[in-house]
Structure formats: structure tokens, C-alpha cells
Length: 156
View 1: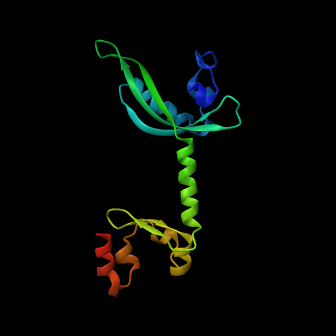
View 2 (view 1 turned 45 degrees about the horizontal axis):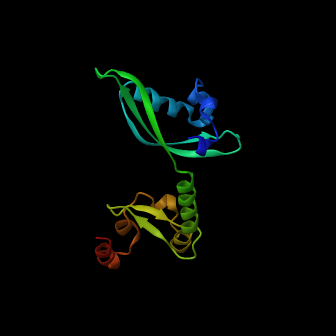
View 3 (view 1 turned 180 degrees about the horizontal axis):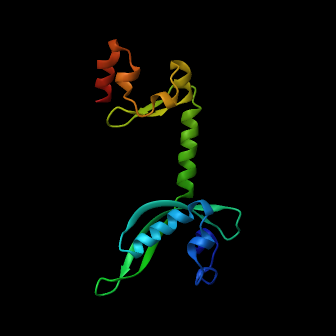
């Protein structure tokens, strides 16, 4: 953790994790995850930002919080295992930006054929905004009837 955040063990021991090291907008949700772990409920893959020691930057973490138990199975604390996902999130944001600003229409659908990606070029060409298309069936809602079966075959 010291390599990622800049905090040493001496900087953190005895300090309140949520109040001192979590960005204000995530304090309530992080506290809830920790409280649930202390009640015996595990949380996997919870994403939140952590303030670095220099205070000028933040690190995006993926947290798995599990209960720590004694020999009788009673919860005695919790263990949080975090992974730095800052670079991954930056990469995802760049990917989204590239798709959205591409000079070609780009769309994506989920396994049910519902639109999950609709870039600006697709919106400009069709007149449908991403708000119009997101979550709606691509073939039924946005493909002309004469091409629906062939497009559906491609998606299947």
C-alpha cells in the first residue's frame, strides 16, 4: 500500500481509514462496505478512490472486503485486499473517448441485442441519440424491416 499511496505504516496505524484517507464523496459507501464485513457479509470488486499522501492525486482501488473470524467463527475484524486499478480506469476512459470521437459509426449490443454503445457518428448519421438507443433492441428498434433478419443472423 505504501508504494501506491505514499503512506507508511506509521502514517496510517491508529488513524480512521474512511475519514482520513477516502475522498469525501465515497466515505459513506466505503464505510458501508467495511461495516458489512464486520457483520459477516463479504464484498467483492468494490471500486473507490483513495487519497494519496501528497494530497494532489488519488488512486483508484478495487477492494475485496472479508470478515476476519476467530476459531469459533465469530467476527473479530475485517481484512481488505485492494488492487490499484488507476491505469485500467484511465485506459477504459480513453477507449470510450476513442469510440465516441471516431469518424465511423460504432455501436455495441449486449447478449439480448440491446444497445450498449452508440457513438456520436452513429447519432449524427441516424438522428438517434445515445439516449434514444441505449437499452433498446437494436434490430427491432433501429434496423429497417427488410434487413432485420440478416442483421439478427449476424448478431446471433
